[in-house]
Length: 474
Image (tube, rainbow, N blue to C red; front, side, top):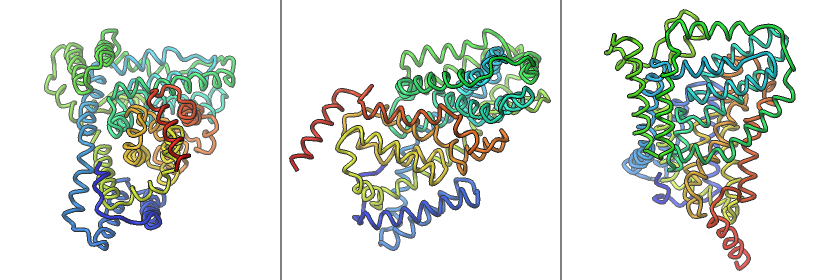
């Protein structure tokens, strides 16, 4: 992002006024009219172009800033392509279906909410999509809870918590990839570093669900059995289908580059899929890399769970990201972001307040715009240089973006995730909100770590002392 190459020097008040109008337009279009994010962002870009023209900034300069802003997301775009191919190949090889089968095996009536949380976490981790997890297993769990006389509201909260734990920690997740890319962190370093805050949040959430879960239920979970039977009938459950995951895990542990790791996982899955199909329809195996895996079981819950992946499925996310980054390029080049940051420079004298400010901005973007990608993109680009100056690594920024950006979106009733999940689960956000423990706990833990300095480098602690002394001297 071209943060240092601003062409205008504007007052913070003027920057705040333009930002308020910008956020108002985008928020109204996304929340009020419910247009797709692309149109809302383009409207925001149009406003900034008009503002730049009024300020007599050449269109060549504005076009350059948009192009350079989008250029900063090329690394994420490339990884998104490979993730799309990985997901479709893992569906065809039975890797993800086998994970789903094993997870469903864990379901029983006892400690229902805790089991729902763990199973959806495993599924979310294996497929990298919180919304898909919620729309498939989540619907089944909420439906089963109603039949069993168990609270569907608490069940929905457990589904949302588990799904977003998996989404947050999965290398297949677009938000995980986006946060790492925006901050400039290695994808697998980012995931490893998130475990410091994510595992405690998971443990606390699990304890809460264990405490409030019913002790036992006598009725069987028929919907879960149907899913297991269909997966077996599709010939997608095999022990050797887990090999691509093991290969990916080993390469990730050895810190092999993300694209090389994802490529190895895809190629090994294609080989297994070729074996499962006895060498038939080899062209179809390659076609699915673009179009994704298509399930034809005839069972809607299973088909909606398995039909996904491919390069084509990533185009929506990629286009939103490129447009948002282009808008970010304009915000920086026109001096709007630098002017706004000057208003809160006092918060950058200590690392603890820098982390809290970043988390606060991510939460604010979610509340105002209800858009998950922007809650990562805007704070990430705004605070990236300040984290670097404070002696913090990119992985520390990406962790805060996920802890306060990704998981907060489903807690906002007018957000993209909130509206979707409330619709498919049949439970309003305002009702499941108090029981989405993982999503509620995560921002507090990341702020606590910032205040205490836990898991932060020693040079950042020194920065606190030096900055404090400078403040007193001035």
